[in-house]
Length: 490
Image (spheres, rainbow, N blue to C red):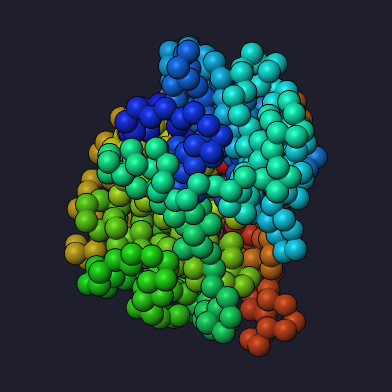
């Protein structure tokens, strides 16, 4: 999976002053530092001053390849120091608390997880000491228990081999303080990811077949420029109608209730919208629905569409997860926004819009500045024939004075795929591979296999292959947002 770094400053944690005195309390404090229960994650918390005040944090998904752990162990503490220095006017952190979170696999125990992650913990501890950071604690959290790597270093007989049980939820001092302050911890990271994960089973097969049909139906429209613009307009009209439909029903309160939203959208409607949103310009125009009360319903729609990117159409999820991330940010939920954008980048590591949004959230760019920049970026798009009741009442040439340039990015070539405007929709390969490579110097990139031109469902597909098409890619001479520094991060 594409790794992205999630950082936060002291000002991001609105907690009363709480003193944590034991490893039990530190283990219990992690979801309050994060706002949710992280899964398969490495978290570093920075502390400053004699009293060890919270100064910031970074989170990183644990790389699947153990050969990358030395690099991650060296780089993540440096990232934490840089983030704290940037946000605190150059003041360095004095100490860190490290967390390694991973649930056991089938037939695996929590202790086995702890031992398997020890090389990563050792690399982290060594790097922190090289940077002059005191490691107050390094905990492995697994299977509702915790183990201390620091304790194990000092005295092998200090901690029991089976670990220590986590405190009962809601019984710690930090839980009581959070309740008093009205702060709630979200569910687990895995639960939030599940809301954006493609469905499986018979319903998934039916949806895949519907997308097959939609791809064939739109091919005649892609033979000329007018047909492409007509398809973009039809897609946005359908998006408008589906958002309005979802607004008529109360929002789901959990992922179990997401099934109701799924039932409100037919396979054929979903298929046409998913195909239409593969055009980057159409996707960009859809960001304009993230104003006001419609943003929450739009987020529900993008989640539902992400769940319907089934089978060979998994890569279609990059566009709708990017929109989900933007919508979540617009409704004031940067946690879900980061997770949605990470999943988008896992599908398409070169998705420029998802990368820009992710970095903007991490750099605390004002939401309205980002909104204005997105509108400005669409000023040169060709006009569409849309009913006045459909197109959001905004001037796409207004705003954007902050731009997407500045301190965040070097603008080389802006993202632009051939998309639907340049040919036929690409039929993606099955199970696109995302693999990590050994870093060169201080960089680490994660590469995904792009859809193969003309790739079709396998021989077992009931419908058989449809005409292939060139894979979507940057237009010659178009611009793609190139970050100045791409860290190995969340």
